[in-house]
Length: 332
Image 1 (tube, rainbow, N blue to C red):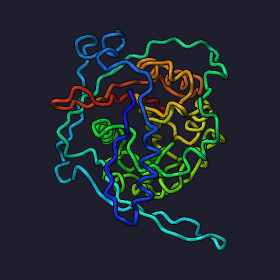
Image 2: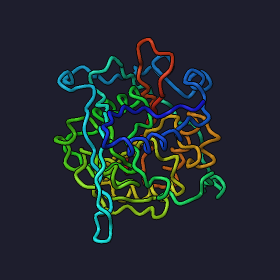
Image 3: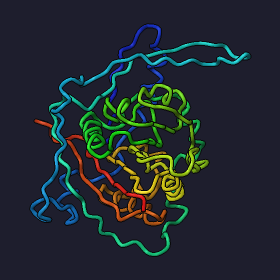
């Protein structure tokens, strides 16, 4: 079933037109075919919790020291258009609400998922596997900024709490396929050494208030990252690897810009723009997505054996919320 992206926008008379355009585009967001989380867990013996592996599921504590952080942050985003000498300069703005991931009623278990698929020596993928229903230029699809969330608040919060635990202070961090939010904890703006972001839309990247620097980049046209070798300690990618038509080449670049011992954190839920997701992704369930990402890392080379986790938030009195999964890899 189609489901709209989660968005809370306070519109003024001045910003109504821009907001309406954003909402119309956001309506294209929907679920890809997937199993319910209960089916995912029951249909595979590869998710091992304490009852099977003898491991205790970890839990990210969102209570300390996060009582000082608000649950939401409202801010105005301003966009300047046609500022060149031959343009018609104009400014548009809208108020957006950011999920901080803190001060929520959710809890955040972290359960290991065992990756079991054995991949052949050479990549088995065919060109049609990376076909997309919309083969037009991605630049046109992403030309209008979308100040929306593509996963719900519990999924955002679970990722934020995971980052807080998994990324050490003073790290230099790169967020690829980024947007107006990177889902990092609020303190990362001060506690990290550097936060670089790259993504499709300039206006979304400009609005990301945790960045140190940014570079608009279409990795489907050119998978080369605009950074020097050994520049980062951590690279993150949020619910976007399903759109990459050269994922192995991109992960080779990720390996290049990572320092030895640096880590990659790929997060994935079950939402997508189906017209832009690659064909084989749309035919897979959540479990198969994790195995596919693991296969990408294998063929990129230079990474230690990967780890996968189910970090789906527990929400009181909720029959369903977006799942969230992690595949983490460390550079050799």
